[in-house]
Image 1: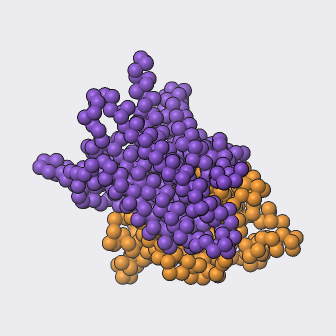
Image 2 (image 1 turned 120 degrees about the vertical axis):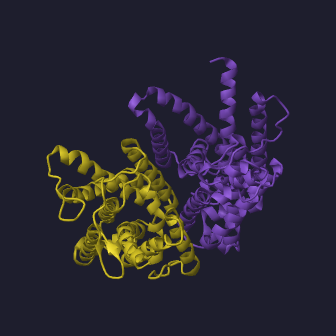
Image 3 (image 1 turned 180 degrees about the vertical axis):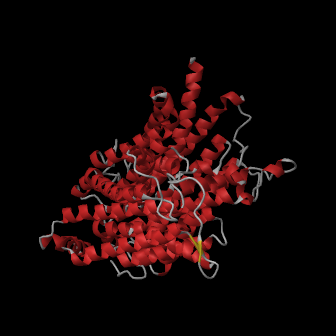
Length: 304
Length: 323
């Protein structure tokens, strides 16, 4: 079980990247973005294209970094994919959500539009890459490092944790220190008030989608490195993402981080007793329990 | 193709469209009239189909029991299977509604996705329950001996259409009653209805249960039409998404629209598939189902932005008292 907790923290940190984006979008645009999991899928598959098709063609060397399972190709792909998915998220907002926002459609209509978007992304992935599982680097697993307490951890997993921590730290600095970060927090608190005080809320919305998309892409790639790529990976992430978001209180970034770690650990530890395929169901049960006991989340403010 | 073949093909299309129309009617109560966002229709589809299958099939015996395992088999008639499916779906709807209907509207959506996924996983992994991923086969069909087997689809079409009409009439009746007007009031303005002394939670719960029971009936109708069910059928794509597109295309808040949408989308879906597969180059043929779903997804986005009222739109006046 201690080993499962460590793996849970790794999975939780990947969930966190999605959940933080989801909670930002939820807090600022006030609708449930059901396409968020599929933005993770999109990120993972765009990286697959770069690493296995484009970069070999450009003659970028395939050597790996030390005992990690990837090298320059992935290091180069990572920021490019984050930018691509950020753009895609913004594009989706311009084409699909903005017209609905302008018509003052309710949050449920926007959520339905997002559900449609999630199917569109998944179908494009299925058309381009088919339904089979894929790997960035097929072959043997890298040897694991033995820690105390019979815990084994792969170098990749340590790097995943470091990457997530640095991305969260960057986001924290962005929200605290920059003018746009402050505008985003103000808009999340009260959009009307923010607009009255001269904040360009449309720009805030663009930034929100950009950050959400970039983080989701990072999460998708890291999951692809840790486990595998699958067209339904994002859909399977949807329940843990929402569970983490609700657990932490909607709109609360730090809550989402903690909620994601709890969901990651709960899902991994459950595999000691249940089949691993039940992971989404575990997330669902935890979410129902939260809704029954403390629907505003552990760090959430009470909303009317 | 000879004319008899064409008619047989159209009958099989109409049976499936009729079953989907029942789903769309159930969803119309929840979404069209009450504004409940249920995106786990596949879950009720799955539960309805399996409940009816377990009620109507006999417990496997002899050599057959080596290959098929199911928790029970009651060998009861079709009509009891349908009733059982409705009751179990209503109960599951109550369990989902209880924690979520008091909260923000999108919590129900997330919870229904969860229940759909959870039940699909359970039926897939628990072999003792209903034979795991291989599913159940040999479901009985009602009035089997009435006509020659090759004409049986005509009988089943009549059964489906009769059930569809009964459900249509009962919803029309319910929605024109004071109860139906409260549902619409809740959809339009929850706070105002609460201030008029209506118990929002109870009305929403009744609507959720009523709609889900109808979805259970539709699931049972599907199971007895195909005679074989497995968890792979009840995916979010075919089990949930296409029914939403049908209702949105036909016009949510309009029962005739729900039926029209189901028939139009199902005919486009199946006939379009044939055309699309013929048009595509050989290398892309295997991907044709995904291309179809992509087109359906884009169609939903277009409807949402340009024609949210669908083909028919909502009937504004539902009471005979006002004119």
